Length: 280
Image 1 (cartoon, rainbow, N blue to C red):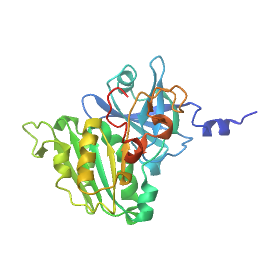
Image 2 (image 1 turned 90 degrees about the horizontal axis):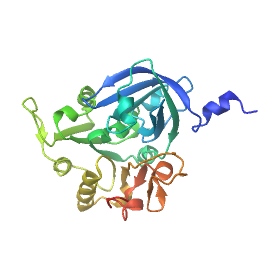
Image 3 (image 1 turned 180 degrees about the horizontal axis):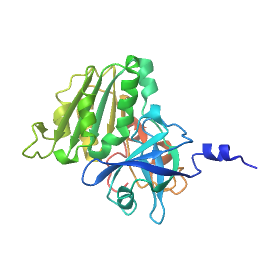
Image 4 (image 1 turned 180 degrees about the vertical axis):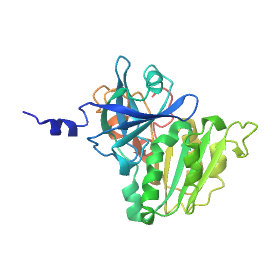
C-alpha cells in the first residue's frame, strides 16, 4: 500500500491548493498565490501544471520565491481557454497542481564559477526569471554582478512594477524599455536590444538568461554573439504547447527534445538549429 506522504511527494500526483491571494499585475495578467502545506520546493525556471475544474490543465512557470516554497506563485496572462478562467479566479477557490517539472536556470553553475548574470526578459518572460532575482538577492555573496534588461509593449504591460524599482540596487543593474510610451512614461522607448547594446559585460565571465518572445531572443542572441559571448553561456526558456509534462504526448517536441522534460531551460547551443523555425 502506498502511503499518503509518498503520494504527496510525487510530482505527478495532483494537490488541490487554495488560492490565498490574487494580484492584478496588468489588465490581462494576474499572479496567483497558492498555499501548499506539503511544498515540494522548486528550482528557478521550473513549472507546474495547473488544473481548473471544468477548464482543463496548463503549464505555468513558477514565479515565486524559492526560499518560500509553501507560498507558490504563478503569473498568468489570460490568452487561452484555460488561462482566461484561471486569471479570473477568486480568492478561496481551489486549483489542482502537479509538479514541479522541467529543468532549471544554471544558478549552481553560476555560483560555482562566480559568474556575472545578464537577465533578458520580454513581457511575461520576466515571470520565469523572477525566482532567479529572489535567489540571487537572498544569497548575494555567491554571485557576481547581475543586470536585468526588461522590455514590454507599453508601460501598462510591465510586470511587478514596484518590485522592479526595489531590485535596482548595486550590484544589480535594472533597465526597462517599452515599444510605445504614454504621457506618464519617462523611461526608454525602443526595442530590448537597444538596452543590450548599452550594457557593459565581460562575455568570458557572464552567463545570459533569456525568456520572452522568440523573435526578441533571436535578436538578443545575435547581439550577444557579436559581442563575443559563447553559445554555451547563453540559456533560454522556451514555451510550447505542453500537455503531459513528462514527454509522453509529444506536443512540445523541438528537434529531438521535449520542452516539458528536457527543458524548458536549454543551452542555446543545444537548440540553435531549431530555434526560431516557425511552426516547429
